[in-house]
Every structure is written in C-alpha cells, then in structure tokens.
Length: 222
Image 1 (tube, one colour):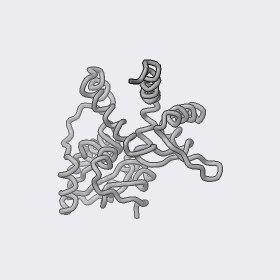
Image 2 (image 1 turned 120 degrees about the vertical axis):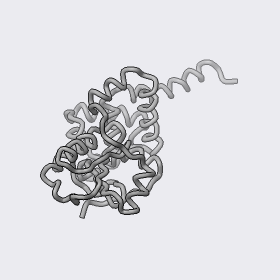
Image 3 (image 1 turned 30 degrees about the vertical axis):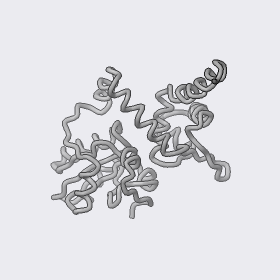
Image 4 (image 1 turned 135 degrees about the horizontal axis):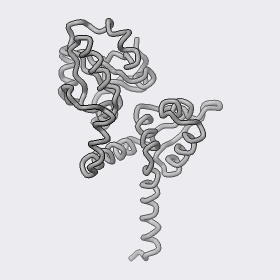
C-alpha cells in the first residue's frame, strides 16, 4: 500500500491544476485559446490585459500542463494542450452554473435578460444542411479562420451594423460565437431584430460544437 507522503504528493499534483484554474482571467485566456492558437500579443489584446500580466498567466497555465507553445521567429504561439483541456473548462462552467448560486446572477448581468429564441446544435446542423437558415459567425475574423461551422458567413459583431445588407432580407439568421457564455451572439441577435430581421442564436457556441465532434471547416472567409 502507498504511504501517506506519496498520497499527499499525488493529490498536491492534482491540486496544481486546480490552482492554475483559480483565476477568472486565466479562464478567459483558456476560453480564447479554445477558439484557436494565438500569440501572446493577440491574447493580451483580446483579454484586455497588458503583455506582462498575460505572459505571467500563460506561464502558470503552461506549468500546469494546460497549454502548449510553439515558436515562430520571435513570436510564441499558445494553444490548448488538448481537447481534454477544453472539455475540463466546459465542465467547470457547467458545474459552477449548476451548483453556485452567484453564477446565474453574474450571467444575466453580463449577457442580459435572455429573451431571444435559441436553437440546439443538432437542429442547427440539420436546418443548415437543408438550406433553411443562414448561419452567421459573429466572432473576430481570425477565430472564424481557425474553425467555424460549415457554410457559416463571417461578419464580426462590430461590423454587423454596417454589413447587415450582406444578409438575405427574407432569411432566418442563426448567430453563434465562442460558447454558451459569449455575449457576441446575444448582441448580434438584438441588433438584427432591431433592424427587422428574423434572428435567433445557437444555444451555446464553437467550444461546445467542437466538443460534440460536429463538422468544422477552417480558412478565412471568401
């Protein structure tokens, strides 16, 4: 039988991963990396952090084995260490949503009152394949290029008001973004509806779509 010292060392090793996750900003970085590989500069800009703080958070995640890197010249690119890291992040959110009372209030304060119609992944896939809806990816263009729902159009939410004419007038639009707690799709649907368009959103987003092993295309928009 193992002794207490070795048992403690094992559980301390497990706890090292938990400690790395015990930061909202580090979870936000994982959320961004779940969309695809990024440089430190790109992550800092997307997360609203300075480079020093971003680098320190990424080193903590790397030491815990949650992210991996590759070098390209002077640039270091970060990515999730595996799909299991994305699954762990998604599970952590679900557990928090289910068992922590404060999450729902924080979710509503961030995303707004959920009055929009939503559609599940499998239903969206079937309706998209049947040509019944226009699928709209409202994430930044680089995230779309890293991986998107097949056939989706790319119009980042910040450009949507100016580019709304690119969407067919009579089509039902299904907007999606990074995941279940991403505000971009909520904002897109509200904007489209304000312009008299029929718009709903995917119930979650690209994170959950990938984890469900549904089809994913890559490459920049045409």
